[in-house]
Length: 503
Ligand SMILES: Cc1cc2nc3c(=O)[nH]c(=O)nc-3n(C[C@H](O)[C@H](O)[C@H](O)COP(=O)(O)OP(=O)(O)OC[C@H]3O[C@@H](n4cnc5c(N)ncnc54)[C@H](O)[C@@H]3O)c2cc1C
Ligand code: SF4
Image 1 (cartoon, rainbow, N blue to C red):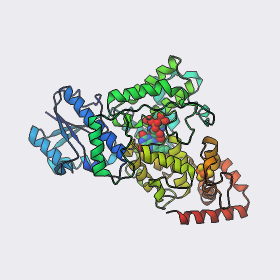
Image 2 (cartoon, rainbow, N blue to C red):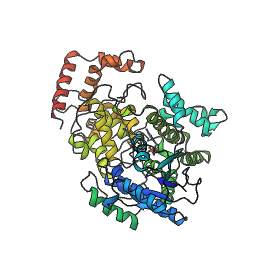
Image 3 (cartoon, rainbow, N blue to C red):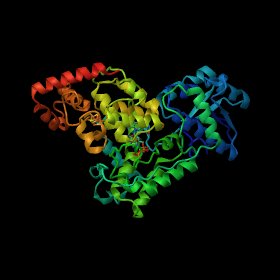
Image 4 (cartoon, protein in one colour):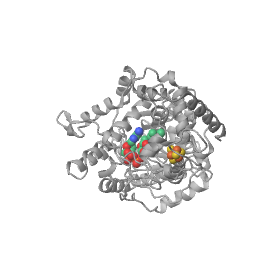
């Protein structure tokens, strides 16, 4: 009989291995290797470890034997001793594993048969809807594997928001309707909070003891850690936030990290919620007349489109993708990335939310944090490691394409044909951050000039040759041409001064 080895992001009863061998024992390891790979946010560690322990208890309640290895005993810290232990206890040396989501895990697993004398049989990872090999053939066979094309195929394949062969409402993508700032008094529903039970409290104490030196803390941990709680969190989002999700998807507001976002990424990534079920539940809200099309299409696109697409890109271009650095950026991360302690209010708010909650929403990640990282020439791999460390929903398959590809455009244009960069004008339009900032969002030069302004224009100037001939950059470069050479010179000096002071 085989042993079914389940990882921390495979906490689902729908795993392809489970029905194949109903009586087989399960092995789960709180791997010191996995949980110590980066200085992870204590809330991320608490979430994953507590969710693992709850899932193991569910399996046991359903009659499975679970060989579960806690992080604590030093002798199991390298996972290998845990595997040996299970082989000895069960007499089984064949392990069945659902394909791991991350490249380095698979590479490590490939070394085990020789090291430990075991055999491993892999099963498809049905927690994703994308077939890795099929995606790879497509992505490597075209000049530019555009998300929108993939997304339309996924809508059609899974029959989501379709009207026969056409998209519901006549358009595939309603993104243009989803860029409203939230400047008026609109009530923002609180996100659902789950009081830690005894298991979670124990994990919080253990994480604090072992990982208390990492940035962030377990204080206020209230995430769902079971399937039942994850479903309640989904229902809460569908009831209270989905209707306005679309309108305010890109908005940023002081003191409101979650706004109308779902805060479901960590639970979906851990396997507590199945992506297709989430998408279908959102579609039902549209069909029932409870939520408008722009919200539901926007939400489904994030999960059926972007989430699956980044997973496909990761597996199509790893290894190597993580090391890409088209512009050879090499600056170290400033210390304020770990604390949020900076006079730039947009970064202070966005990073502050990450330190507190292990979360900031998509536009803060893309248009504040990574926008800054790109303009300031921070090393993409250092930024990638920071995202991996600090977010509750981080896993290499999702962080790496989002950071190296989408956000920092360091992948040579595989994912995006132009960088997502902007000056303070965008930040001021989409948020209330600028009005309480030390800097002046209108000024491009002078003591109070917003760094986003001179960093943006000098970035375009420095990489002008790289962007020339890119049709999507034409208008931006035309605006760059209008800048007076003396002003550009001054902005270059401001940039130099700013960068030299960045620590
Ligand atoms: C630089 C950068 C780093 C990111 N790092 C992560 C990460 O570590 N983990 C992670 O799950 N997502 C990551 N994302 C994608 C996205 O920002 C988060 O999924 C989202 O903000 C999570 O919050 P939410 O659940 O409230 O999402 P919502 O705004 O409510 O969106 C719904 C769901 O769509 C999915 N989704 C949306 N956009 C993406 C995307 N670009 N890639 C993958 N899934 C997406 C998520 O599952 C999310 O829960 C990153 C994006 C950027 C630009
Ligand atoms: S003025 Fe500049 S630094 Fe300040 S919040 Fe606005 S964009 Fe950010």
